Image (cartoon, rainbow, N blue to C red; front, side, top):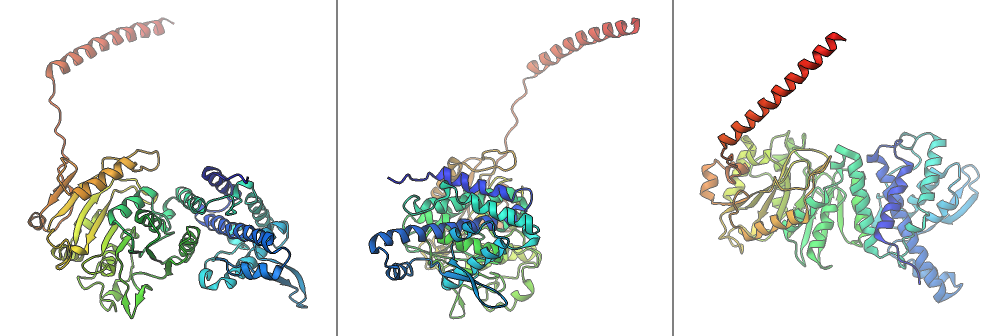
Length: 518
C-alpha cells in the first residue's frame, strides 16, 4: 500500500524549499519561482502517475499511451534543444520537472527551465497562456550565473523530496490546493506591505465570503482578486461544485498566481482576467458588464490615480451616482461592484478603510445615493492590524440588491451597524480573528437585532439625521463608564505607600553616611 502524504508534511517541505532564496531574493519575488515550480512539479507528477497506470494497461504500446495522455488536463510535450548555428538537435526530452531535475547541473539550467515552461504553455495555450510569466534565467532577480545556477539546482533538489511527491495515488487533490494557499499566506507574512498586492488574510476572506452568502448555482466574482484566496473561500461557502467563478486582476504576476490557484483547486473553468477593472474591465458581455449573484473584494485602499479622468465617459455608466475623487478609488470599486451585481438579487461584500464611512464631498454624495436607493445592508467594523499592509482598522460594507423595489427584501429599510473592533486574537505583528469571533459577527448579521455595545439596527431616518455619515460610533455606543472610586481604599493605599517611602528614605540616608565615612 502506497503511504499517503500528510498535509503538514507537504506544507513543511514546500516551505523549506524557500530557504534557497531567503536572504538573497526579495520574498515578494521568490514566491513566484516557488509557486511556479510547485505547479510544474504537480502537473509532472500527475502526468507520470497516469503514464505508469496506462503502461500497465497497454504495455509498451507508446502510441496508445500518448493518445490517452493527450486527453489529460495538461499535456506535457516533447521538446528539443538545437544548436543555434547548425540547427542540429542536441537534446530531446519531455517538458516536465523530472527532465529538469536530471539536467540540474547544466550550465544553462535557468534557460532550460524557461524552455520547458514555454513548451508547456504552448501545448496548453487555452489554459496556460501567459501563466508562467517569470524568467528563471534572470540575473536581476536570481543573481549572476554561478549563484543563479546553484540556487536553481538546490530548488530542483528540494522539490525531489518524497514529501513533495504529488502523485494522485499518494496525495488527494485538495491537499495540493491547501499547500498552495499555505505558501501564499507564508509569503504574505514575509513580504510585509507588498503582501496587499496578492493576499487577503484567511480569516478576513472567510468572513467576507460568509457575509456574501454564496449558494449553489451562483456566479461569483472578485473584481480585485489578487491570488484568488477570497474566491476560494467563497467556493467553500457554497458547499458543492455548482457555481461559476470569475475574477479580474491588474497585476500580471499576481494574475498568474490566481490562475494556478484555480487549477490546483480543480476550478479549470474559472475565468480570471488580467485587466484594470476600473478603466478596462474584461468581464463584459455584449458590450455590457457581466452580472453576478455574488461580488466580493478586498480592493486596494484609497487607490491614487485610479482613472477618474475617464470616469465621466465610462462606457458602462458605472459612476452615474458621481465620480469618486481621483486620489481615492474606494467608491470607484464599490460602484463597479454594485453595477456588476444582478438587479434585485445580487449581494456585495467589500473591505474598505473607515474613511469610506464618513468622508464628504463626492464620496459623501455617492454614499447618500446608495443609502437612499436602499442598497446598504450592513456596516461592520473590524479590529486594526489584521493586514500585513496596514495597521488601521477596516470595515466591511454589505450591499443587497434584493432590497431594491421588486426584490424579495424590498421592505427592509434599516441598516445594521456592528462594532467588532475590540474582539480579536492579539499577535506580535498581526492580530487575527478566531472562529468564535467570526461566528459571532455572522450570527449578529443574520439575526439583525440590537446587541449592547456591539450591534445596532439604524432606521433610514436615523442615518439621515446623521447626514448619511456611517461612522460606527454614531450608532453603536461602546462607552464604558468608569468604576466608582473607593476613597477610603485609595487613602489607605496612599498611607501605606508613604510609610514604605519613609522606610526607604531612612535606609538611603544610612547608606549615604556609610559611603561618606568610607
